[in-house]
Image 1 (tube, one colour):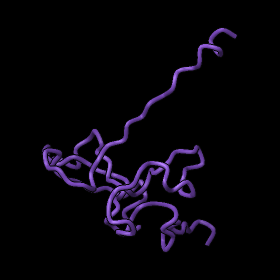
Image 2 (cartoon, rainbow, N blue to C red):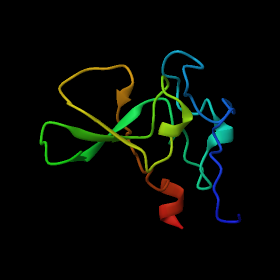
Image 3 (cartoon, rainbow, N blue to C red):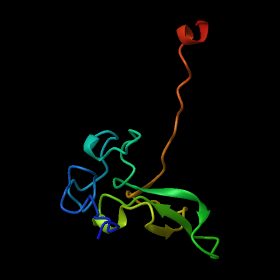
Image 4 (cartoon, helix red, strand yellow):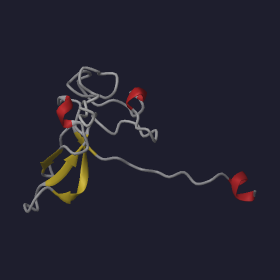
Length: 110
């Protein structure tokens, strides 16, 4: 029984944007209770995120992860994958921009 993992998103719309609880995407940071232990925000729900790899041998379909605002919680875990053609535009597909901040000038001087 100790190895069973319960989906933390089930019946808790305070953790992520999913299940059509808002009806569209939301700004990053709207769900602080759903942050990862490292403090990353909105890693699940809101919009499927395009992956760099193909879904399978079909080179036209790219892999997506993370679930979306319009789907139920079963699609939120990072192991859940989906696919589509990246040339199509949908409001529930997107990408994540990662920016590492440079140390401040004061920190460099010390």
